[in-house]
Every structure is written in structure tokens, then in C-alpha cells.
Length: 135
Image 1 (cartoon, rainbow, N blue to C red):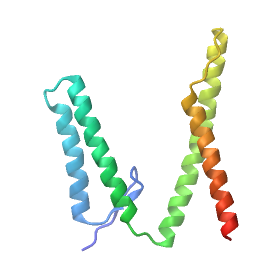
Image 2: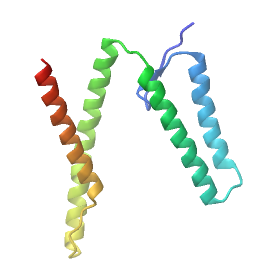
Image 3: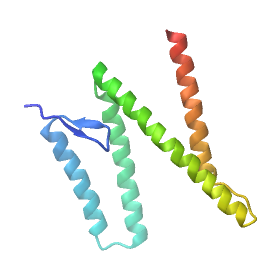
Image 4: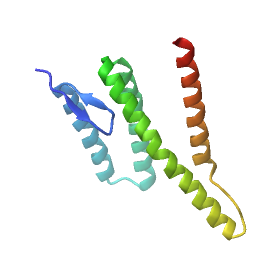
């Protein structure tokens, strides 16, 4: 029996009971680590190591998952909507940070949101350029 349940925060589906059990065990281990009587620094290192392992494991799994055309279209629309939702939030955040720091007499903007916006523009431009050349 194939069981398919959309896991919205992962952008993927759990297709078997083994996948659901894996996801539950991952979350239980993460919770257990937080409940262990460790120092804050040790807990941070263990959690970071666990999350790095999970990221590598999930990247490997997501890379191997086969999707049909409909799933690609749904993912593309979801990615587009996420980008459009994040852009104004980043722009407003940069604007607020610039205004508030300017009022204090020391204009400053955190470069990370600016880099994120520039990287998004570059990724979109390169993708559009490549897709137009392929068609």
C-alpha cells in the first residue's frame, strides 16, 4: 500500500509508512536531544551536527525522488509564490533598517537581506536566459 501525504514544510510527500516513521524518528531524536541534561554549548553542537546530517540525508533523498510533470508545475508555482512573498518583506525590512539607522545618524543596512535579493535577481535572470535559449 502506498500512502502519500503532503509534508508542506518540506515541499515533498511522504509516500510510504517507512517515510512517515523516518520523519517521526527524526523529530523525536531532535526533541530528545533538547531534553538531555547537556550544557547549552554541547546541546548546540549536537543539534547542529544532527541538522547537518539531516540536511545531507534529505538532499540525497530529494535528489533521487522522481516526480511527474504536474508535480514540477506545482513546485514551480509554489516556489514563485514563495519568492514573491519574501521579496516585499526583505525590501520593507531593508527600508526600515535604513531609515531607523539613518535617524540615529549612522546609516547602515545588514548586507545579508541585500545579498539574498541580489542572488534572487541573478538566479531568475540566469534561469530566464537559459530557458529562452533552450526554446
